[in-house]
Image 1 (cartoon, rainbow, N blue to C red):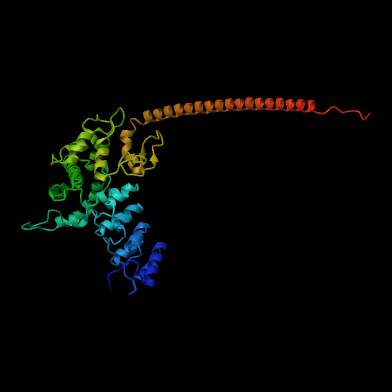
Image 2 (cartoon, rainbow, N blue to C red):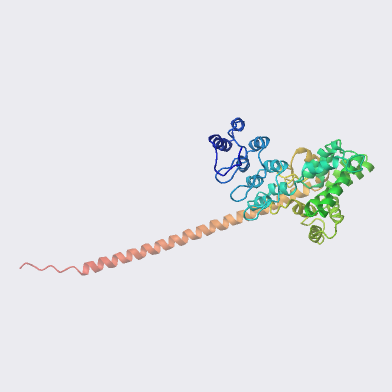
Amino acid sequence: MSAPVKGDLSDTEKELFVVIAAGNVQEASRLLGSKDVRVNCLDEYGMTPLMHAAYKGKADMCKLLLQHGADVNCNQHEHGYTALMFAGLSGKTDITWMMLDAGAETDVVNSVGRTAAQMAAFVGQHDCVTVINNFFSRKRLDYYTKAQGLETEPKLPPKLAGPLHKIIMSTNLNPVKMVMLVKENPLLVDVEALEKCRKVMELICEKCVKQQDMNEVLAMKMHYISCVLQKCSSFLKDREDKLDGLIKSLLKGRDSDGFPVFQEKFIRECIRKFPYCDATLLQQLVRSIAPVEMGNDPTALSVLTQAITGQVGFMDAEFCTTCGEKGAEKRCSICKMVIYCNQDCQKLHWFTHKKICKTLQETRQKHEAESAKRLEKQAKEAEEQKALEETTNTMENLSVEKSEVASTSDIQIETASSEPIPVNAE
């Protein structure tokens, strides 16, 4: 078929755009099988079917179009938008991931010079920004699963690529969550496997720094992951309880307030160990956390997370106290001050939380009592103010009525005095 021209659509292609808007995947599949349909056809604005599906947040439709050869990097849109940009605008992380996995380029800019990540940030879709900023293709990792040059075996066994890639793509940098990801895969719960994964992370970190288009953010993330894997390896060597002991160490809170001191120290140590001392990002991280006392905000985890994910101002979200997952909803039934994503995380954290649970409960009850008194005082003041305003209004109304009565009397007197005196006919 000839190269697509904006607005030059067959009747079947016009129908395809309508079907995509309706979300009818089955009908779209039928139309895409027609010889009269080009999967990369352009509407009058230069939008492809994939762009429409991404913007409308229809993941199944995007998957179907990609299977039929949709060009994920087409930028014939009148303002230079790509499918990834539309995915970011939609706020759908699964579609954003799908576009990236299909080979979407992240550094393409639109007519006003914004990348997909910048556009998503501009409209407040920070989860999509995080996905884009943390994307590392499986293809780049698979490079290390093949022997290179004179190597007799690859640096990374192919069976480890999947589990390791899952950790790399995680946007939750809480070390507890990362250890959980290691623990849940039997292939990784092995000292030799962890060492191989750690070395690959260090190689990727070095490559990110030394490549022409230096990526300090990705380098720092790879370094951080390598530190977590090294810590897992150390515990597997020395502890009978294996990774459970590491998780408990990371969760153990200070007796006075429950602050996880070991976790804070571990993350600070990871940052300090970043091997490229001249990196701007490292200097920024050190300046942010160095003057902060242990237990005060910002924590090392929050500073590192903001630097790597690029998220700013998302404090309205709830995060699991145990693993840091976003969207946690289950609160401790006693103190109601800490929140978890599920019962397993709550049980895992109980050994340390129980020490301060009662104190937190008393603190909450005290704040609630003070808040209730404050609200009661405000309500009373509002009621008194209302009563005062009503009294003032009543007095003003009485004053107006008296004035009107007096005015009426004057008129009557004046009228009476101005009547002519009758004269007898005689």
